[in-house]
Image (cartoon, rainbow, N blue to C red; front, side, top):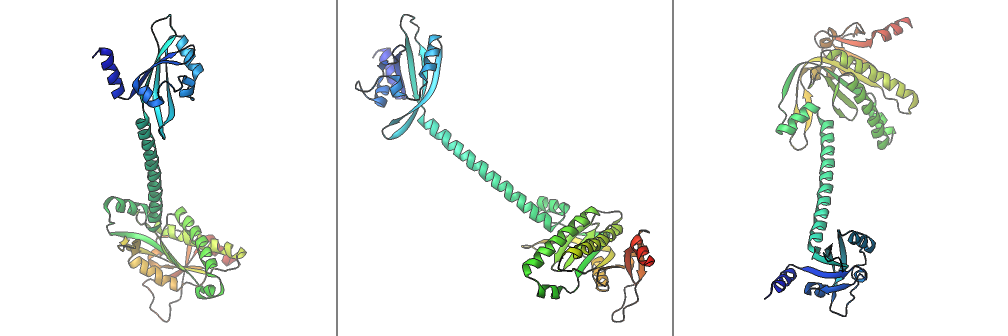
Length: 351
């Protein structure tokens, strides 16, 4: 077997089509067996433009005039299947003949694999985007349930260790006549109103260094000094409480539902931790919380009552007026005090 025959068999075995193209007529002068298998025998068209309609013949002629090479890809239908070949044109060395050697390699499988890889990459990218979006939603949900430092601890270790905070201040709030408001208004209206009010409270609290712990229907509970220490935690809850009432007073002027809040403030130690296994939430409990809740019960509508534990921690921007002892239940040690801003108290005195 001659070297030429061996080369021809090798070319056919690896699925490479070889042909000689006349650059003047753009017809094929020679085709190997692989080429014939693809396009048929002598009866088939021999023109490049017919075999490869997408081939840029002008660009091909231009490159061949300069004695260079030209590469392209072309697709055609072969036995009900789309086939893609990589084409390499090389100008023959004999300058007397305008002939180019055309080598076509079947890259259909490669293109199919590339398409599969592209589809897989798009799917992975889409799934990664979905996972990232879901992760952000979960993070946002958890940050609504616990402070960021507690969330970071939970994310790193899977648990939040209970901590004792020795010196913090607590603010509790509820609304008077909440049952009557429920009876006389649509539930959707009530939920919308509470959403607006509690969102405003969150913004005010954040401004003064207070962290909302939880809401429960008509009650709102916030703390300053948990989980990050706040130097003037008593002033933080006092400032927030005053502005809660100021916000409600302005709101009541333009809304049909009048919300009359009463607030209780206290200072002291608390415990902070994530409570629950399946439906977990960050909670704060302890003596300061209990005192703030009991103090709130003594507050009249649209007023703030402070426990004695917070009295000595406030500066002169606030006035504390002692409340008369309750007849039904014993008072906390040190008594309770009606809290107002000093400027507000002075204005009331002037009236």
